[in-house]
Length: 170
Image (cartoon, rainbow, N blue to C red; front, side, top):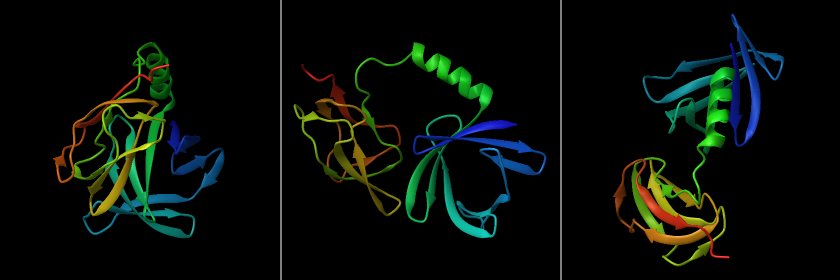
């Protein structure tokens, strides 16, 4: 089976043929196994062993991977699913900037934006704590802050709308 794995915006073709794993056409010895009943897994790649934590992401084939203290968004889809997704994504793309939503349950630590603020894509809007780590959440697109639905000390659930953005005024 052929997959397209996207990590940090880089697409990597992965093919599994029996017990053989081909990464970008090259054979790789790899395995993933559970570690003492927790969310932690042991990832073996060649002779190296890494401890990783895997959590389901916000869609089919999406994962949050924590490796060496870094959080990565990973999407692994088979070729057919990826192709269908790309064809339908273009037709149903949302107009205007998407709202900033909580990627996981957590506690709002700081709000860095206020209604009326003009923000660039990637500008920090809010800091939340989840699983004893502070995460700076950034604007998914340039725009003007329409509303802030979170306050310091507030607990939020995954998917909660934290900040609404409106299109930039020219």
